[in-house]
Image 1 (cartoon, rainbow, N blue to C red):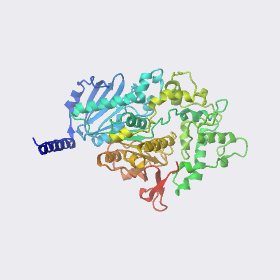
Image 2 (cartoon, rainbow, N blue to C red):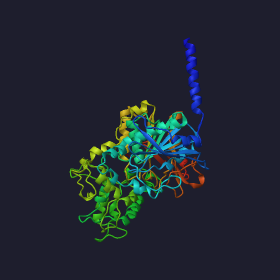
Image 3 (cartoon, rainbow, N blue to C red):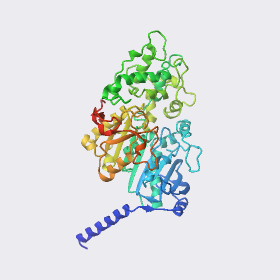
Image 4 (tube, rainbow, N blue to C red):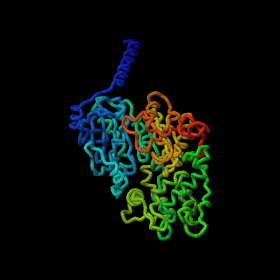
Length: 538
């Protein structure tokens, strides 16, 4: 056989393979039922058991699909929906806070586009009621996701929650998909925000072969000891644990800050484009007498606000956390829960973090965050925290596999954008500079957006299309259009793209870091075409 003949045969085989990938794969009721009888216990590193399947008929927004529930040993819960007209893509959806749920419905938009979708509870399956569609009640989710008792002296589950459970779930999901369709995914994608964003970066850093494209929104825990979750409450207590600056005064503070800084970017729209350029004069809030009122603050209250803006420092003056972003003051309502003079309380998950998940030896339910010492206790948080901190800036292996990652964060986010920006800068340096880094990573900062969504800025983006076009067509995302919808901060859901014009209240572009959108000075300020890129100040 000549070399030319061999080349021809190889070419034809490649051509046939590409054709096979392009053809959608179908499945049906019987194949879904049969899947429940298949054994996946021999899956390497992820012995898996399917506990239930059901075939769901198509609706106006979703295709027919096989709904799959199961677990990976010992108890990493997984959930998949496998469409009967599969595009060859695999999409995995991240979780939030301390997880414990399998909210597969959050992946309805990629499912409606033909992707096989999956999610995981990250290794801490919690019992909660399901409806007839096997979905949980969104009202119940926070009760599960924000509780930490499961981690009490339970290092194995903490390892799964940190990174191992997500890895197992990916391996198991791909094995189930390959068995169901008799074909492995051609392309694999991840999307997540908060804890899901942390999962995305850990996958990119530790398992860079799993996904072709990852969307990492507002990654939680970018610093190993994220103390703001309780410190912002603690620093606002007096010696008797009474609140200094009250929750009913937060809107007043926000109003004054916006009045001084909103127009700095050339547009008064309730959004501060560059929070680092905002230097509010808090003296205008000073009460003339000794007592606070609904429209002024005492000197002690102003001092407390200044600490909140500055962030935590120990007695040596070393910074331990970042401060409240200017424009994001309303987010303090999650940390300051009482009015001035009332006995203060911590957000329950903040206490649970300290009691059950951060210290090497969990102090347990009797621990009170009021006893936390910034000089000594801060450094005790690093050993276990490092298990789940996604701060390795070396993404060279992801780039070598051809992988791409889009990172984004709102500038009103009280989780603070600074740690993610610092991480991105380090990753760029490790990659050899911006030109090389741009081949595999981009960061977007979103003025006015809260944590993951919400806030006065735009908060809805088709990141799925952006990452898909980058991976499959070689088209870097560049400027991405953001939308604000009428009274809706939920994920768009099935069949939502393109967004209906009737629900859009404004559009605005977001640009790769270091730029944000700057108003041109004329035209409709709710129309994205009237903005251009301008550098942010951090």
